[in-house]
Amino acid sequence: MKSDLTLAFLQRLLVYLVGILMLYSFFALIPKKNYWFTMLGKYTLYVYLLHGFVVKLFRDSPLEPLISEYQLYWVLAPATFLVVYILSTKTVRTATGLFVEMKMPKLPKFLKVAPKVTVTPRNLSNERS
Image 1 (cartoon, rainbow, N blue to C red):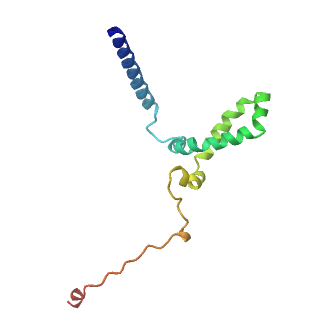
Image 2 (cartoon, one colour):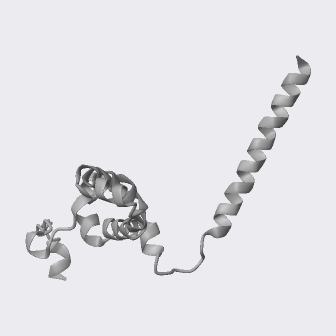
Image 3 (cartoon, one colour):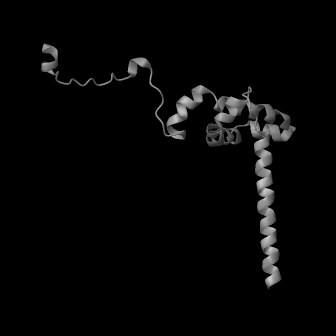
């Protein structure tokens, strides 16, 4: 019984060590400079939450049986990059920002409300001197 617990402890310790090694390996792959794909990585939450709608639309369209029947799977790779790019654009982020991040979209200037001005009484004794 004691040897089973020791073995289980060592297996779990090994799994944790491999997990930490994988984490450091992953962070080593992250670039330190900005590249053309940096914007895509910055807005992955939008892509992650909204791509399901695109997948559902694709599954309900006549394209899925066509791609499957003629084995046109190579078309899916460029389509995937296109979907990621479109879902990362500022237009999509502005339109869906309320639902994704729970923040109101920025209003155009003509719709903005003017700030309230508070009037405080003047100190008359300072003005007379």
